Length: 391
Image (cartoon, rainbow, N blue to C red; front, side, top):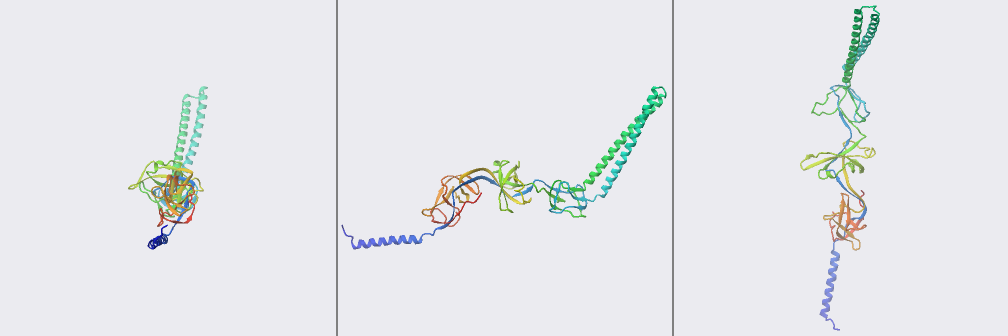
């Protein structure tokens, strides 16, 4: 075996030293692993949903902006803002002593008319009996025919007077009814059980009804607090897929929890052109019961998410993990590297995306994709492995 020359040995030693130095430099200068948050690919529910384009509003099923039918001075104000009232309860009374006097006068005239009816009809009965008596005597040839004619005519005249008196009594009753109706126009009553949202009058002030075509603040704003719903604008592109009866979730700024027992109750049969390039269809969503609408107030801001399709027990990943081109970053546990993986997706919403193929249950994908240095081929250190967000 040939011996290696001293020159060749030295060259080999130098090359080995350079290789080791390169490995050392590469090892000590390599980028530090990036910290990532991981979530597992798991099974669960995935939905396809549509949401409102602008904020929706909680509204009452019944709301009446009430004002007296006639103007006048407020003589009685029985409620304040926030009061709960019953159907038919008096809210406000306009000064009406003159109308009360007219009702009393009409009632007295009706009473007098009734007395005249009684008098006229009694006279008619007496005249009828007298005519019958004269007719019997005439058949016995005891009285002249002229007396019979006079008695018969008198009976008919008395009967007509009775009918006239009854007609006059009906006129008096109608006058009483009209007077009471005018009096009722001065009394403002609650048309249903509700809560007083606003009062725009004070005792002693003058109020007037709103002129036609000129809206004015209501004297009393009454809301039926027992029935609430959400009206929300849905983009015209999404509206055709919505049907009444579909399940919906309601989110409110004032409350942390989502209320997912709501149903679509109405889809407006027209498109609203509120802003340029912003055409929407108003959709109304009602709550399942009083429990879901408890503590809500009309006027709250609300968002709705309508479920178009739902699939249970399917593979899913949080939509936040999905990158452009239906890709996710998969964490390879053996070497700690991040791998870009394309997968076939199914249903999707802002929370979850269904995995049809390309990912296996239990594999971990990166949730914190927006962090610096998080990319395919990077070394990673799991900062946390957490459950996917609920929903």
